[in-house]
Each structure stands twice: as C-alpha cells, then as structure tokens.
Amino acid sequence: MKRASFFPLDIGSRGSCTVGGNVSTNAGGNRVLRYGMMRNLVLGLEAVLADGTVIDATHKMTKDNAGYDLKQLFVGSEGTLGVVTRAVLALHPKPSSQAVAFCSVPDFSCAIELLLFLKGALGGRLSAFEALWSNAYALILESVPRVRAPLPVGSPLYVLVESLGSDPRTDVPAFEKALEVAPENNWVTDVVIGRSTREMRALWEVRDAVSEAVLKLRPFISYDVSMPVGAMDLFASSIVERTARDWPGAKIGLFGHIGDGNIHIVTDIGADGTPRTVVDEFIYDATRAARGSISAEHGIGFQKRAWIGHTRSPQEIALMRAIKRTLDPDCLLSRGRIFPIDAAG
Image (tube, rainbow, N blue to C red):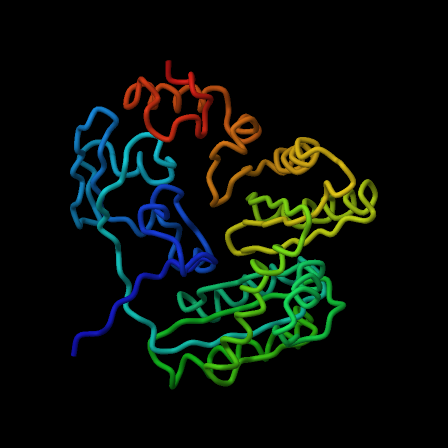
C-alpha cells in the first residue's frame, strides 16, 4: 500500500503564503528542527533571469555535484537574481502519529537540557521545540481571549514540544515516557500533554496565537534574529532588561525556535516617540554582539538593508553585489531589496 506524503514546511502564514514566496525567502517556521529550512526542501527549480534567460534546474536528484548548485542562488535571494517560475519540492512520508506537550521551564539552561534529552530519547521523531518567554505568554493570554492557558503564568519560559512518527502504538508512549523524566530532573516544573487531536490543536493554538496577539501592539515592531543557541539566554535577558530600563512603559515579547537558534521579538517601543532607527540599532547591535544574524528567516527586503553589515562581512557583501551585477546589471529585479538601487551598477 502506497503511503501518503506531505510537505512539512509549517509557518504562521500557512493559509496565505505561496511556494514561490517561500522559496524566495528561504522560509523556516516551526519544524526546521526536523525537516530543515525551505532550502532543504527544494530539489530543483526553474528561474527566469532579468534578460529573459530561463534556467531549467528542475531535476529531482538529491545528489548532484556537477559544478555549482545553481538553484541555491535563487533560494533566499528575495527575487533579486531571478524569478522562480517552477519548483520541485521534496515530500516526506505523512506522519501517522503526533504527540504534543506544553511545559513550564524554570530557566533557559533547563530548556536546553530538555532539548538535548528529547533529541536523544525521541531521535528523528522530535519535530518542534517552540519557546515562549513569559512576556510573550502573558501577551497572548491578555490579547487573545479564546486561548485558554494550559499552564499558569509566572514561569520564566514555556516550551511546546511535538513528536511526529509512524507508529502510534509505540511513538506516543515513548513521548509520554520521555516527558515523565523531565520533572524528575527538574528540567520542567509542569507539563500538559495533549491526549486528543483537539487538545493537541489547543496547545498549538497557544503558540500560533502570538501572530494575532502582536497586532494589538501600537506601534507594532518585530524582529527576526538568530544566533548560536548558547548565546540566546544572555541575548534575551539583555533585551528585556534594557527595554525595562529605557522604555519602562513598553511591552515586549520574545518567542521562537530554540532548536535552531531563532528568536522573534515583538514590541511597541516607539509609542513615546522613540524613532524606529533607535530600536533597530538596539536590537541589531545586541545581535551582532551575539555573533548572530539580523534575519533568521524573513529576509532583508528594504527595511533591514542598512544593517546587513551587522551580519555579513565586507567581503561577503562585495561578493553578493558581484553576483547581482552579473545576473541583473540594470537592477530590474526586486529593485532596491537587500542593496540600494545602484548597488549593481
């Protein structure tokens, strides 16, 4: 019997995003821990260059080292090098088991211990390890009334864990057994495990609701940064502490994907008249100090292009410009994104 397949990319805009957009931005999302970024899910593609040349790299091979991997030029390039017109995507066997838990965690180091333990205990079945700092959890519960709190507020950190597998008879008990060990080692202070599809959806809704909660912020500013996992705790603490000190009336929420070092920051700093550039400098300077990236999965676009030097060296930027100049010398494609309009001239 042929087993069903599915495409594993899972992002907050899952109801409105497009394949081309996901390719162009190298989308990530909730299950990068298991399946990787969009870059890992594209086997081949077709792209049209600025001069009309069609690059047909629509093969289905996993291994192909015959020269440069040209498709990777276009994945994550935000449409600046070519227009992606077709894509060959890597499908995976559709999981037949799912297990979800929501945990309160005493501190970040315990979250890392839990992550490492679950990677070993669950192996390839561990599909998501999503974190909500206490400020983001409180923001969700305050702003989205339909969301029921699975655990009381007050914990420094909350983690949603998901396992996807192929055998419900063994996968779910293994997941539950692994979570039983966590309190015994003081990695978590409390755990709620979804016992039905409805309960698992309710736990995921807590994490997904952050996209709705942030819309209540006025103004709403968001950041998408990444860094080595070991740097995340100090980074997060410094962001929260400075916000409380310099903008005591501002709201801030941190959440993201601990398993791949990606933190999202949302805030309403600026309601007091603070310019956006001041907030950008604050966040991106802290990101550079952590040796991180100013864009984990959302791209550069127009808004972040002034800060690309915080992430990329002058030599890297020069090479990117040379590639742009070669493929699009007149800056016809995605004009002004990543680099100023005249960058390729």
